[in-house]
Length: 460
Image 1 (cartoon, rainbow, N blue to C red):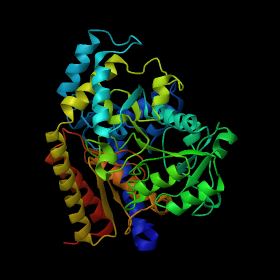
Image 2: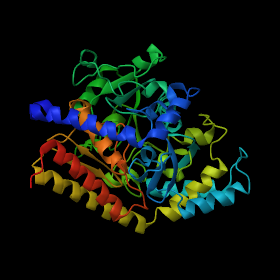
Image 3: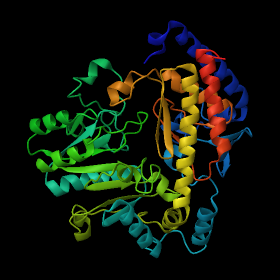
Image 4: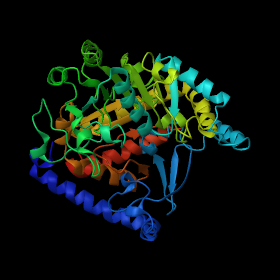
């Protein structure tokens, strides 16, 4: 909900907070600004387009435990978490020991090592999927999932959610963050909008878009394309648009509907895997799919990913589908993943994450209640966000109506007071690591309280 619709003066206060906090940010980030100026050989001045932020990128020096340190010497409680990667925190002893030991033995052979067996067995137990293969990024695993659904069914089209992000391969770079109202199309049958330049029109046309939490829309899409839909890919808890939970019974009914039409279901757990619980969002919700993709937190900070399934993955086992990659199952990544899954993500670690989840949720909610603010706190294991709207967000159209200035103001306020959030405040979520403490959470809540006071006045 826009600030103007709540109260005209709130819109002015939001702009004022952003202006004041931007001035503070620039004063604190002199060396980061200098490094941004030096980075002329880096396209756009950063190593990823998602690192380009306003007023400029923050250049980091190192991390330790739950903390990050920038090149200007500022310390932060890390709630950014590398977009979901840093569930172990930084410099975790088990990860450091595993990587140090593996480096001395060789880091790449393009042949399997024993650690890959342990990691695959662990994933099979967590996700109740018997067959696994590794990749190097979430994009690679979701790409394999799309290919496998097509290979298994002999069909070409896929279904994805409006506002859903699954990496940057062609089939899923459609209607990720569509902005133009005129292009969106009907609510129940959204248009497929290319998210980037350089995409083939035929590929975009082969991706059918539906809204989240709308089973009739999926049924209608299947009816419009009889015998053409290979499958559907979605996050069981939708991220990249805040946090959107599925309606009760939606996921199980969705799987039944797709199977009735000869189509398959893939869960993209690149962000929700391990962060939402030991079995990711699938385990948290008690849901199942034909294929599941994991990445990010799995590698303990190193780049790796995996795709798992049952009958569909037999195509890989038989060689009918060639799942390849020179760095797949890289020994260094497998050593880190083994340590992450068997030593870091223990029952005690998850119990502490749950305790901290409750602490941050209750702390933020107390601030909201004190101000009688029309905002919601949404959490999913180690991940969470503040939705600056009065009602639950069920789909991208709901999310789109959220005023992005709230997220930017929140990012700046937290950043300037020592809590590092992802810079895309409206879109992204916070992440807490296994090394976070009560003090980290209390710092975060205190800064949120300051933001609320600035926007809504001190209720005391």
